[in-house]
Length: 209
Image (tube, rainbow, N blue to C red; front, side):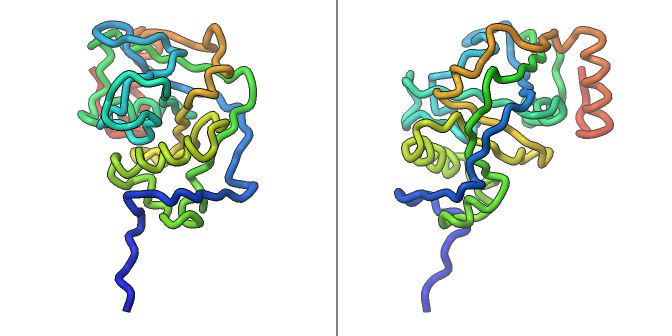
């Protein structure tokens, strides 16, 4: 009798495959919340090349953490998911520390994304549970995906917090980033703070300060 296979192997297969519907061509409005004060601050449209960061799930950089030519940028397709993901550790939306800013933009072209919200993982020896697997496992899969399809702009993934859509951008997506965003204001700005407060309380069950 063969032993049961893990739902999500820690080491992904080297012969990853995809069906036509697994690769999306989309141009969504993207949201992120980013610091403007403190150490290691980057512009809103610059990919972080130092990594992998242990708390992040889909890092393309090789282990161990170091400066790399590979970059990553985490975004969401809604403000609610961006808030939930950014402040998940404490479930407190902190509008003051490190000068957080809410920024949204539309890519200048369609993004080519591997869709992890459907059946791709199952067809490649894992399961939909890949989205909630240990982050080190997800990073191993991300590196293999990046190596297999180097032209991909990144991943479309389910948020583990809201079930909404997150988009992880990799190096090829740099050519899709506009010079200026559609929207960018401090999280502490009264109108933005009021909107974030409503989302935090009614949709997320988070507090806001």
